[in-house]
Image 1 (tube, helix red, strand yellow):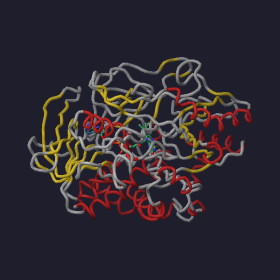
Image 2 (cartoon, protein in one colour):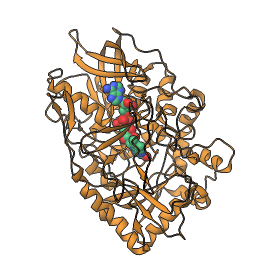
Image 3 (cartoon, protein in one colour):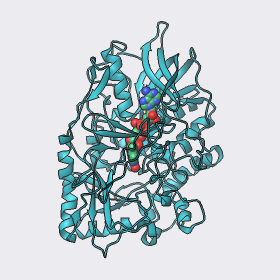
Image 4 (tube, protein in one colour):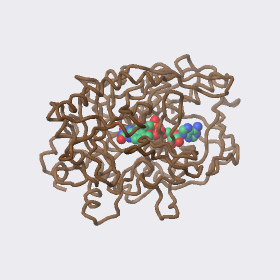
Length: 542
Ligand code: FAE
């Protein structure tokens, strides 16, 4: 790839981030990846063990915490309810293809629950064997929350879109955090650690697999909306080789939602590989933390269940830890903390626990193009661009693929909107479950904001919305989120660095800290905030 092309001057719409700087900044970690490969599977934790630091969950927050603690000389054990994802299935591949979901695809479901449920009038969902698969479609009352399950958390299933919020929007994202420090130190550190870069715009112009994005750009620009390239953690050189037919196809074979067999730099290949290379980090997959309680002799007693791949509990274990980092994701961390507070196990937690949850304003829609505007039957599963109407209309829309393998004449979008509604987790003693009070109707502001873009484009192009993707006669995918955020909000449920109130040595370090919206895709912000917080915690608490 030519490093001196004009796109080097900056990611359009994401000031201060140049492609060349990223590549320079990531060369060491990419080298480490090549050497270390995936984070090694470790022997499971023994009941009765004592560990200095225990991390619940292996997503972005957990991986940052584990790496930085280990580099500071602390031994870390990570507990992950999902599988290790290091062993190929009968087809020789670790992950199933998006178009052929199988036992690997869903977390303990007997039928798939695809975000796009229908196509041309036909339902797409099918029966699958119940298994500890990679994607959890967790039904929380008024919303389905999609989450990754396994070592690497959401990085296993997501689109890899690695977006730094515009600086002017940051105060609304994390009001108590020093923006100057974040943009100077922690966003660059996170982007380097994650291996973020953008598509080569020259290649983009001719790549068959991005025709859908070029059509999306044309329509956006003809209606006067800013089109932006969006950084990603996919290895763009690998994708160019996929297109040239010289390596096995992954993004160009439609792999994304149920895992990616090559090309995408998931946490297994970046932070977790580096963490494993320190020799101080071990991981117990298929272990689900059920309780964290003050231990009589100091520190915390952590109870957990070991799972078989059919979800059966095969062992119950209890260990002690000096410090516990909650990194089970917004929903996982919130559910644990709400229950532990309500049942008196962690009585010192404050009344902010469970509050401030949002879905990052996610809403999906498709548009039906004219026959002279084909979007291409070969579509890269990795999005690389978006439409930024945040300032004027409260919506940032990623131009998403619809990798069906046939020409659909459809443009598809996942919008992130400024939805102001926030929900709360609470304990239902009668059912023994934590519930979320999100209402489907609370998505209406998101729909209205997305319409600021797509009503105008449809009017200009003389096109209409697709009504066949989320059921019959339904335009909006307003029943789901990919981006759960909040539930243990920074500077409210915790102090300004994620220390939980009332229980020294307990920390939150994941998306639960962020109050419901990041204005763009969230994982770079989750990673950068974790980098900021763990640096402070290591400097002052250890
Ligand atoms: P997360 O990555 O969810 O990790 C939490 C981990 O904890 C998981 O591995 C859980 O299995 C584990 N866990 C939960 N409860 C327990 C327990 N009790 N005991 C043990 N382990 C437990 O948390 N974001 C972007 O920025 N760009 C994208 O392109 C993008 N695309 C997405 C596409 C899809 C389909 C999905 C589902 C999400 C997408 N996201 C995207 C969101 C992103 O993956 C998500 O914000 C982060 O993964 C959240 O990071 P956390 O560290 O909070």
